[in-house]
Length: 196
Image (cartoon, rainbow, N blue to C red; front, side, top):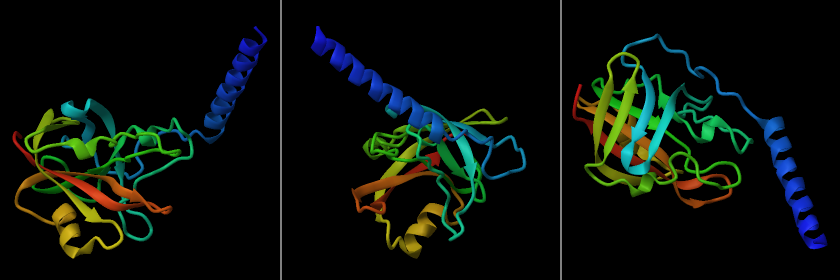
């Protein structure tokens, strides 16, 4: 009986510590971290049936060094780990060009985040973007590609963010090996619009 009480006490202390930590470091979800003019094409939710993903889309811009922003938090339960980020200065999903949506592969502490299983996507898998006023846009996966993170190169940046006459949505996350400063690869799922 004393062992049970000891284990219960330890469990409650750990649980209380986690709750206090999350409360102190909790980041509230902004309505939008990059202001955009309201448009019927505005992406609101991302749905990937094969991965059981149905999540809100946040607008982001660029960091001070010109890279696509991907907000983070020290809170384990932050909405940043379970949301995705649309690169708002770029193409809007459904329009001509390469629209880009990113998501974290893991959260602080290494637990899975929203794009943990993105690497399992296969050609012809479905990706759906719910928009402000244009309904659901359906995309199909064309290919899944890994790029080095430290030297992405002009060809990679152009393939993911560059201009194109097609209507594409590119999903991006971290991949590869953790180096202590980040992952050594970027995983990109290239998709093409099949309805408008």
